[in-house]
Image (tube, rainbow, N blue to C red; front, top):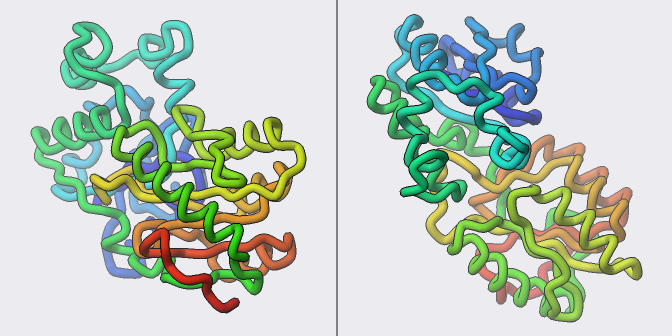
Length: 286
């Protein structure tokens, strides 16, 4: 099994799960993103620039991989929008051919889904087919219900319902997955900067705090990539910014380090809930 590893703990969890399931794991680690600790878990470890798709494909084929999965975040702002950002990654010929329509010809857009589908297609042409990482670690998908002792108030429930509609529309447009609301008013929306920066901006715009963070899957979510993920870092960011609630989509959101996550959320006095629909009744505390 090939593993394209980006930033965060998620690639480590996926690699460990694959090893426990008996796979030989061959990692293409995105430089300046992937955790070097992956080298001790995987059977082979090949650091590669984010624009070196050809090198990743050759690494997988050399080790007999016909299937791969991707896990972890790519910091898109630094890759896409720095001055000469894409060029400074010294793309190989395979990447240039794949992304010429996005970056040079201007015939295709640079939305997340468009770019990631191009990645999947170029790997498929090289004989490597991607599977969702959640197929191998389904237990990481958060289950429906209250995650914390604190449950939603009636006012917070209204904010969740409102924010859910906004987040789904944001996802449908492939802009982002997170919306921050209070009093059924949007404070901040996620774009290329990512969830944490969106939450921090909400804290700056709403210094009184007490806001609700809603993070959902896109209506057209491709589970092979860009699956919503929350973890300990998300909780810390919400608490520091002054937020009170985190609502996520059950069955389509990855929850990392769940036992520690629950302890930390309760310690911080946050309400965390996982819903399958925005109008779910206010749940009892778990």
